[in-house]
Length: 451
Image (cartoon, rainbow, N blue to C red):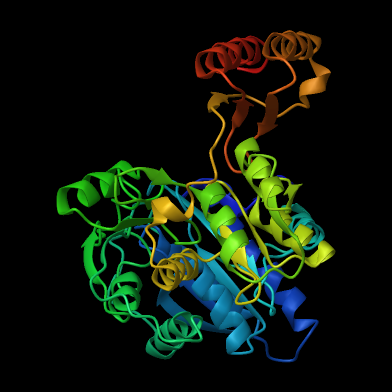
């Protein structure tokens, strides 16, 4: 990770560095120059979620690209995996998604895709970052598209050919007809990018669909809803007596489920479900360092291996490609099914879960009953700087003490967030009260040293 690019592109408060207009214009300028080195007149797609700031960021990027001779097609409102699909399917030279995923509306971000529909590698991002931050480099002319205030987000524009092509791709992923008649589902769109996509896709298979949080206004994306607040879907599922709840984040690259009893089912459960019921290229799947130990034990019982990658979908994909594995993902609900797409796709994930439920004639709860998660706790501590933890003897000493208290049947993970100034402390073990107490001790020490 560099100064601009984190684990998922550039992210920050819209209007402030690194998402100020000057930096955004430089992103377009220097990426355009890289693209022109590959083809005479490159074509790219730009899409956004429903944040108020999306419109001026889109226009700033588009103008910067077009001044360099790039054809920049506006896709309007689309999901992040939708951009990856469009870039690849329409044989474009690259794509940009303007989104801060699960973050609140004040934040926004820029995710850049290669012509293959993959996010840029660490090396490519760092090379681009060096050009953007070079104070001796060219200073682009800035057009007046941003007046310093949030603008109302245009929620009416959807590029119809892109939209319909992506919908058809999703529905055809089943390969055989799926009949969901009689199934009742609640879909929480998080007031985000799939507020039009999701109802169209799920109703196509005949399910009874209740859609919630599908009225974005530019400021309510992820607000007490979506995958970071699955309690909204939980309430709706229980109220309706529904069979399933599906909760997306703002750009729909991740999804969390609610079973018919109102219980949350996260990415670890879904990885187990897919490992059991989808065809595997190898007897293994890819998770991350955050994947629950219970997933690893459940896979071991069915003779499958869990390979762990660093947090971030790009690292999951790298591990999948390196070892020839076709299923991978994160506890957060970011799942990659490379037989269908190399992008984490919440809509695709949800459709495959529904297909398995239909094929097996079982509820989600029945399908994942064999995967029991160990108690886990996660604490985030805001930090002023992201210095390696092993530079601080006090932190290392506290970690050693906590590990001794917890014993061998436990796991402690300490890492920094890739997108926020946070230290993340995760502990798994047999006793919930004990792991919470130990996590608080570590959190207190980090606050003393880095807070």
